[in-house]
Image (cartoon, rainbow, N blue to C red):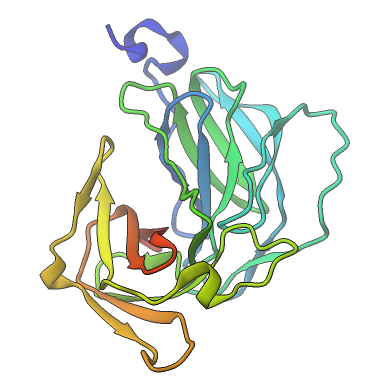
Amino acid sequence: MSDATTNPALSEPGPPPGDTSGPHLIVSPASVAPEADIALILANPGTTDVTFGPLGRLDRWDGTGWQEFRQITTGLGPLRPAGGVKALDDEIMVPAIALVARPGSFADPVWTSLQGVDAGWYRLTLGSATGIVQVGGPDGFTVERPTTEVTFDGTTVVEAGSAAVLTLEAQLRDPVGRNFDQDEHLGRYTSTARVERHDGERWVAVPSATIRTIDSDLSSEETSFQVHLPVLAEGLYRVARDASVAGAVEALFWVEPLS
C-alpha cells in the first residue's frame, strides 16, 4: 500500500496548483523522497527583473489551506552546499546577496535540504515567488548532484518548446582557496558531450545524433564549449564529457516552461 493511501498528509484533497503567469518557483523534483535536497528555480515570465535572497519560507498544507511552518535557507549557486529548514523563530544570519531572474528568463537554481520534514504537501517562497513540492509520495525521488572535483559552470536552465544551446566551462566544484588549472585538473577533452534525461527512476540517454558539441578553440587553453540541443521534453537533464585528466565531467541542467 502506498504512502499516499496510508498517510493522511498525502491524501486528497491536495493543494491547488500554483499560479505560473507571474514570477514563480519551479521545484525539482516536484515529488521528492524524504530527507532529500531540492532545486528551486525562479522563473520570470514578466517584463522586469525579479530579485530574491537566500532566505525563504516553507508552508504546510493542512488539507484546506496553507499554514506557516518553517524558514528555509538556500545554497547560493548551483555548486554550493544546500541550505536547510529552520524554526520560525530562529534568527538567521544570511549573506546580503540579491539573486536575479531577468525578464523572460530563469534564475540559476538554488538548493535546500528537506531533512527533518515529514511527508506531506509544502509551499516554498523566495521573495514573492512560490512553488509546491510533495514530500514522501509514491513517485518521489532524490536528485544526486555531481560530486567529482571538476564540473561545468554555465547554462543551467533552458526554455522548453524550442531548440537550445548550453554554454559550459569546466571549473572546480569547490574552488575555495584554489585556482583552476587546466593541465592539473582537467587535461584535454577526449569526447563530445553526452546528454541524459532523468525519468524519475534512472538516466536515459538522448540520442547522440541530435546533439552537437562546438569547442571554443581546440588549439588554445580554453575549456569552454557549446552543446546544441534539439527540442527536449521538460525535465531534469545531465550533460557529461570526458577529459584526459579529470575523467567524466558532469553538470545538471533543466528544460522548463517559462509560464
